[in-house]
Length: 604
Ligand code: SER
Image 1 (tube, rainbow, N blue to C red):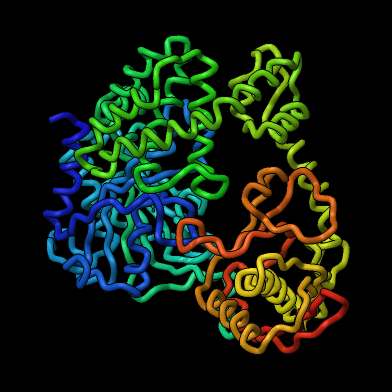
Image 2: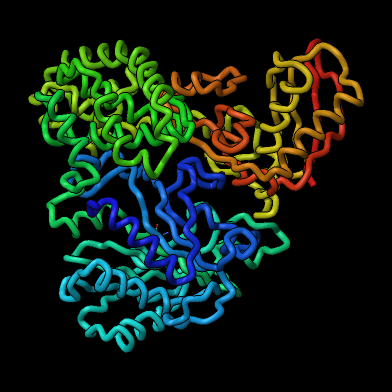
């Protein structure tokens, strides 16, 4: 058995023996609308930490263990170096309260806490994996003004494990506190195990629950605070590929057995590619195959856009390096050989390859055009790079990859981002005095209201206005357009084109649908994107306003969880979740001019 297979199987067995139920990896599409993609093992268990679901009835134990498929979009641009990957697997063990005993010799099914978690982690690393204690040091949370020092973990490392003090380092919040993946959720201090100065295992002690910033007004004192939970939990994560680097004694993730065959197969076709390009191909083919296998399709929004970016980059490298063979298929065969046994969804080969082929056919041409454009420049600075980005949709790293090397000597990311920011500022200034056409009470781009309470109400009314427009179009007539909007803390007023009075039934339907969406507590969020892209996304733009090149689009709903409800060009601000609006009521429907109706409404 190779280390690739042995390590993953040993991990699950080790924790199974200690009362943990082996749970299959969840999909890369999370059922948690606060995150785009699954980034950690704990995500599928969030409701067991909060007590909404019962681990005993679902798993027969308060302890679980997994190898979880993960995807981190924040690492896309780092791929190609020795450590970063977009897709990776995370090994983890989890405990959900109440804590039965925290005795590491207790192999029962009850919840446990810091002592067992630390002793087992150390035992697995030093006994099962036979990593010598000399190679190890650990970090613990030093505490700050929000949550205190983790003295317990320090004492366990020192007294029970017997680490010398110089091997127990203290770390700040950014390294040793694991926050909620969304706006709220379970969280707590961490202790991290380093091997040869590389972090391999993160043990999170979920002692707190971070509350939502815009929590209900009734609980105003609990807004955005760390509240100690009754039943603390354990959430650990150890990156599988990174661990293999240590175990196999190689220099980087691409030399491990998880990657060596895909790399060598790609190299056979990509003869002109640099080492970095080969690594990018290997990573992106692997991660996009997993995304497609889980049901994501290329699009201009959310996870679909992430997939599109990966595929575009594969296409670009393929064109640039004259790779004539189907490098995606070649790479995918290896992914399937290695992972098909663990992830049967990868065996849907026909569908996975056809998604790739469709995207290739569609984008080959525009990428090729962009490539030509890029090579026309003798000198590309931040300004030109931003122009190319804006007009051809080529992300910065693609410009770097496609341009003539001499032309980008003076190009750096900072300048590019400054250009980007400049445009954002222009776009903000353009929108600021209009707030997307809604006549909010405002003052130099900032909302002005008599008090914080009034401000909060105006923001809620603003989101309610987006929902009203959506509901009118959905339930009455798709041709309805916003002709005017005015909002104050007492009411919202919305003018739209329609040529007759609405019936009481129609008003009821419009209202009901809005309240239904409010009750679903859908996320409300924005993205900034080039105007053309925004139009592709289908954003509504209803008012006579010249848009800047980079625009802000507000979404209500989740693409991966029940669908997007509303998409509008808008400067904001909005609530974070629809339930904050409370409820919605239409108070009046009247005519203001020929073909123009006016609705007045309020929120509860
Ligand atoms: N949630 C933590 C992490 O992702 C531990 O699993 O690192």
